[in-house]
Image 1 (cartoon, rainbow, N blue to C red):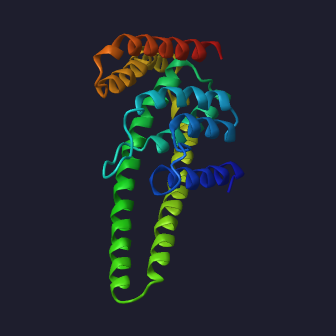
Image 2: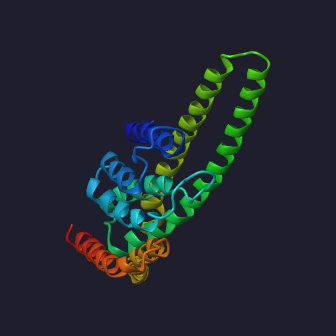
Length: 232
């Protein structure tokens, strides 16, 4: 196996564990994950560019309590690896950049389905642990915790391997099939993606007095994203 996929898998195990099961140090956020994936696959700047936009889109979608949001960590794994590979092959132009961001949305939904399944398995582990404790097996608590942590780590490694492989495959096999003119059609949608993220964040705001500051901040973020994207 390519050492890059090995690193991607190890990173995925840590980030998915941080996402819900333990720590929660924000290592799983798209900006962090996409940047690291970009570095692993040869272009950290390209991964960061994807991470900035994904962070804005999914900033208000958090895995809190029983809520299962789209898998922004998986989207960042896919987008960061794909952007890095694309930058060294066909070039990360505006059309390719937008196409990868749009495909990341589908990856996030696939990861959400996997997350839902893992949580169901984890609930089953918790029930078995509780039944064992009722029967007098005190060590069942330790075993249950280890089983739950292992479940999230193994799932994270598997998802990171699948999503990073998909990102590399898309950049090497799918995007080159579209000519520059076809990829250019995707570029029309690029300005809408950061604005969509801004609208998502603003919809969660409860204080009207912060509206002016919010819009000024989002305008600065959008301008910075565009400047960083075309000056890099």
